[in-house]
Length: 537
Image 1 (cartoon, rainbow, N blue to C red):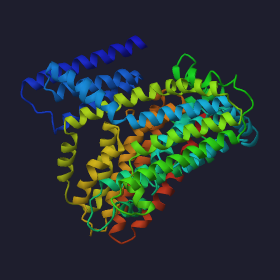
Image 2 (cartoon, rainbow, N blue to C red):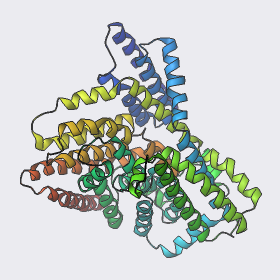
Image 3 (cartoon, rainbow, N blue to C red):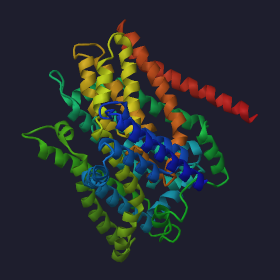
Image 4 (spheres, rainbow, N blue to C red):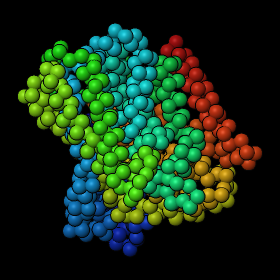
């Protein structure tokens, strides 16, 4: 199988390179055209075919570099090494630090035995599979500050619980992913709210006010949460997820094997961990981490303000790439001191966790570096110009425009793997399409934000998707394939809701579109459960 996938990847790369050389010889311009989306699309298709993320992303980077340099050899190498990889590492240095600090905290908690203590408590007190899924969902909702923080914290805390109830790791990854970006996108106090606020240039509304007023129409984010709750209560699965859940019942949870660096560094000490750790030795470090990260975000936000401002103003100005590593570093020091004073780990054991935490995050950092480099190639090909021109030409049928915006945002986020980049591109365009005096203005903005989350949720090159599979310690491509049917289900119903919102707006009952979406989600899942039961019989 590995030989076949390698041949496929090589063949696609050779064919695409030949096409680029031929087309380039004819004088075709790649920048600002549909060609700008070809590199990420090739990477996505290859990842789904080969189930191997590293080579797929690298092929996409090379194709993008070839296209943006007009197939010049030196220009291609410069694009890959400098504009791509080096820039990606420097731009994401803060997030990389945050991931490393988080990995060290996870290793410390595992070493103390607190994770095992929590797992034993959960096995006794959480009786059912539904209870384990709802507990994972609740923790994901509570950690709404940042999606990266959400993904890795929920995964490390809840994996012992979901493992004990024979929930597959890809199902855990879906629960993490479904409560990461969707929750952050409807939480007024989050790094995502700050990012959206920074993209808004409105004469009538502040960025945070626009974000809050758009929340009721962010159908994909809200309906994803409804979907997860209903799916957990009905306790069934469909699509490829069903196959993994069946395997999980026989003990094959789909976790990474001990030969993988993540599993080796995080789990090999699990069974040997001392029993000195208690549940509060897990809870207290998490509370410290959350508190310090919030403080870091606020501190950075207040420093960015030119004058006095409110709590909300500080969050709207904060930079998560600075605030999160700042807060997590302080938290790490406090947690080490706490665990050493509690005598659940020695100072030497705490220091041993530093390289282990770093090594555990190397695969995630590598994929994130490659994914960000691919985004840089897409930006150099002026994908935003192509999307902007396409959207500017969409006129007429105003009631249908929110649904069109949602689809366009989905496609852009899926191809580029970034929510923030997508709404950064589309919000100014949407603001021009829907004047602030229009009754559909907030619906249009919400459609843009919801589509960005949806496309990001589905994309194998999305950083949040990568973090979710890393947090659950499962194969990344397996996570993408199993969550796609669920994400697409919610996307289709969200699309219907945006059409309904446009129609309902004509009779001033736009608010009815959300209850319609909830009813469609619940109804669909009831029908699917009956269908799967009949298939079993």
